[in-house]
Image 1: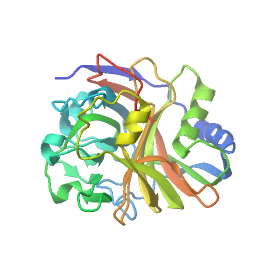
Image 2: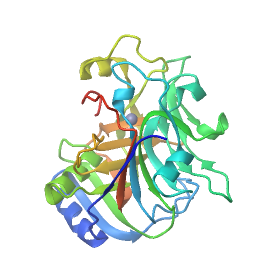
Image 3: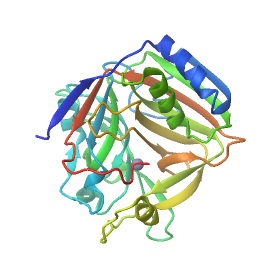
Amino acid sequence: MARVEKFAFHVPTLEELVGVLQNGLVENFADVQVSVVKCPDLTQEPFKFPVKGICGKSRIADVGGVPYLLPLVQKQKVYDLNTIAKEIQLPGAFFLGAGAVSSRVVGGNAELIPIVQAKTEEKPAINGSYIAKINPEDSGCLLEKYSAKYNDCEFGLLANLFASEGLPGEVIEVKTSRRTGEQNFISCIRKTLEKHYGDKPVGMGGTFVIQKGKAKIHIMPSEFSTCPLKTDEEVNGWLKFFEMKAPLICQSVLVSQDPGFDLRLEHTHCFSHHGEGGHYHRDTTPETVEYLGYFVPAEFLFRIDRPKETHMIGRD
Ligand SMILES: [Zn+2]
């Protein structure tokens, strides 16, 4: 079994977080409305998740890391979400987040948009994940439902996961439009939390919809690089970048400040119902963009299989 490290986050009340986020987000968006709401039924459009909500025993799992992808891939690094659920002490956990596929299952590299309810003793896993890969025919984006081709819960190399019991309950709703600052939606939330809570790290996860506008998204090529990628410039030359259009449904995991576990502090992958998806960087339409998100603070962080040799390349 992989090495598992556990950390208890600082967990503010939802009411306190609403005030902190409202004050921080106005520095980046013209219109901001943050409130506590009942989580909308996430089995409905546009989410269509296998569970109704993102509440109950919330956790963040940071599994593996970019050092298993760069400078050269370590293909033997594969994980199973059913095992991760046990390692985070939540069998049957509902996961959402951002990761990479298991290349031994998929036959190449691709972005994974994990949306999975892990198995329990009574029920099999429900895998509602998507894969975004480069279409070999036209080098465009090919978005597929994971369950259309595969029936496992594997992933590879790295994943940033938000886990919960998948229950309905109270969540933080964040509505913003017209971006006036330079940071992306999630960086703005994360840096607001970092500024307010400092060395008391706060973790959050959830889902948000880019309702209007377009966004800069990347997809990793199907072939791993055979020459070592040693700088951000070399990584960006290898990745394929796209401008994708709303509505994009984005799964986010963020930690305000690293308490010393070599974390990826934010990671967001998106899917859509029009064939586009991948790794979210930022919107490209500040005047017209609209975001609507639902988030929950995490109680615990689990750092699983942390790379022994690390670096800071490719973490954007
Ligand atoms: Zn990613």
